[in-house]
Length: 191
Length: 191
DNA sequence: GATTGACCAAAAATGAATTATAGTCAGAAA
DNA sequence: TTTCTGACTATAATTCATTTTTGGTCAATC
Image 1 (cartoon, rainbow over the protein chains, first blue to last red):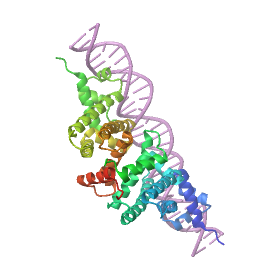
Image 2 (image 1 turned 90 degrees about the vertical axis):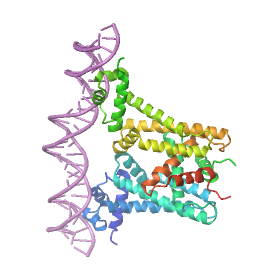
Image 3 (image 1 turned 120 degrees about the vertical axis):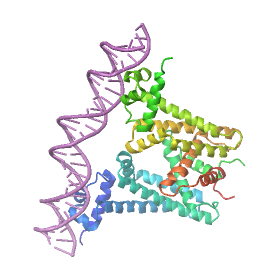
Image 4 (image 1 turned 180 degrees about the horizontal axis):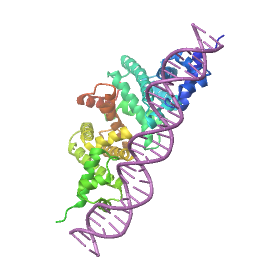
C-alpha cells in the first residue's frame, strides 16, 4: 500500500505549528518533517494559510468532541454549562496549538494566529448558543437573546477563570461555579 | 507674582501626552511647549515616568469627579451603577489622554501606557467596590465579595458596551441597561 | 500521473552608521 | 544665593543597504 502523503503533511504541520507557531513554521520545515518534497504539500493545499486552516479545523473538531463528552443530557443547564466551560478552558490551556497561538498573538500579533483563535472562540459561542436556546425552550431559562447570552456567559467565565488571575490569587474551581451561579443564575437582587 | 513654572510644565506635558502618547512625547518637546528650560522639569519631577504619573493621577481624579457627579444618593444601586458606568466609559472614550493610551498599547504596547490604563481601571474598580459594599450593607444586594462583584460588573459592562461591537452591531444604551439588569440583578433562572 | 527539489521574486532579518532622547551640571540670570 | 537654563553625554532608537530566508513554481524525475 502506498504511503498516505497527505496525512504525513498534516501531521507534520500540526506538530510544527504547535511547536513553533504560525510564523516560525516554514514550508521547507514541514516538508522535511513529513519526509516529503516541498512541492507535494502544494498538491494538497494551495498555500500556507489553507494548510493552517485545516489544522485549526481539526482543533475545533477535537474541542467539540471534548465538550460533547462532558455534556450530560440528563443534567441541568447550568451544571452542564459550568462543566463544559471548565473543560473547554482546560482543553485550550493544555492543547499545545491553542497555547502557542495565544502566545504568538500576545508577543508578535501574527494576524493569522489571531484569526485562528477567533475562529476557536466563535465555535465555542455557537456551541453555547445552541445549549442556551434548548434551555429556553425547555423553560429552564428566562426568555433572552441566545447569542448575547452565550457571549455574556463566556465573557463572565473567562473573567472569573482567567482575567481575575492577572491581579489576584486564582479562584478555586468550586468558587467559580458558585459565583457563576450567583451572578448569572440567581441574580444579585435581594428579595 | 512669579510665573508658576510647575503648572506650565504639567499643562504642557498633559497636552503632549494626550496628543502624541507616552513614547512620542519628548522632554525637549515638553520644555519647549512649557517655555521652560529642560532642566527645570527635573527640579519638579525625577524623570519622565513621574511626570506621566502626575498627569495620570489628574485624569483619575477628574474621572472620579465625573462619576460622583453622576451618582444620585437617593436612587437605587443598579440605577446608579448603570448610569455611572455609562458615564465613565463615555468619559474614557472622549478623553484624549485615555484614548491615546489605549491606542498606544494596542499599536506598540508601550509598558508605561499599559500601566497607566491599569491604574485607571483599578480606580474604577475601587469606586464600584465601595458602592457595592454600601448596597450590601443597605440590604439592596445579596451578601457577596464586593471585590469580585465589582470586577464582574465592570467586565460584564465592558463586554456589552465595547467587546460586543467587535463582531456585531453596537447595542443601544437602553438595551445594555436592560441586559445588565437581566443578567446580574434578576438572574436567568426561571422561577 | 505523482513527486520532487533547484530556482525565483518577494519578504524578512541583520547590523553598521546615523539620529534622537533622557537625564546632568557648570554657569547665567534673577 | 537661589532659580533656571540649554549645551553636553551616554545610551537607546531608527535607518537603510546588504544579506538571508521564505512561500510558491515548474521542468525534470520516478
